[in-house]
Amino acid sequence: MKALRRRWIPIIAIAAIGMMTSHDAQAEGDPERGRKAFIACVSCHSAEPDVHKSGPSLATIWGKTAGSIENFGRYSDAIKASDIAWNEDNLDAWLSDPQALIPNTTMRIRGIDSSRDRQDIIAYLKELATVGAAPPEESQQIDPADLSNPPSELQVTAIKLCRDTYEITTATGQTIKFWEFNLRLKTDSSDKGPPAGMPVLVGSGMRGDRASLVFASPAEISSSIEEKC
Image 1: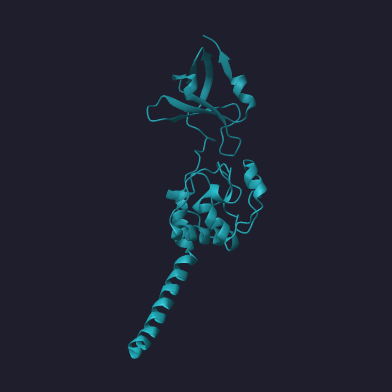
Image 2: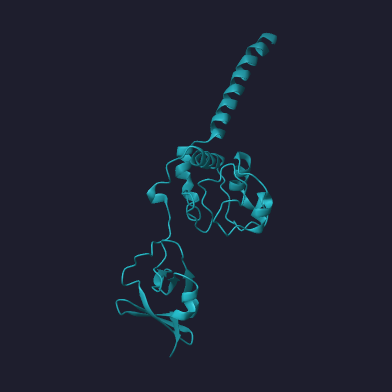
């Protein structure tokens, strides 16, 4: 019986070492897999420096304090007061459950359940900031539409408001009517925004009854709308 026990000891030890090696390999993260897994982030974040969407660019966040990316003005008070650094542990916790790491953050999306996906994304962000890395594949990038040179059918030449209805006339002469609640008035001051004085109509909604009217600046909104029936 003693001999049998002695025979099993090295086998168990080898199995344990194998399990530890497998765990370490899984926990390390792969930046190339992370580049592909980054698709979970691109609707709100870009991987290009200084290119911000609804959330900040993630190109240079590795090692920085949360809420410190310059030229991004939509950080929550909770993020700015957190005083945490974006290292492996904090990024893993954030990607797993943002609200658990920083309560009251405005990032309210569900976390990423897969530990491997989280580690891969972290490896990609680290490589992106430290040595540079390929951006997400073009098909994975979800960028706002480039409105800087809109086609004539999207160029708006007149906006009238009659009671609860907007009448939008485009450069092709077409007039489209929207219930006021279904027309969103937006601004885009970036280099992808519309030219000054040329608001652009961007359709949205499954039924074609909703749209966004995008201006180059807030000052253009009220001055462009004629209240007339």
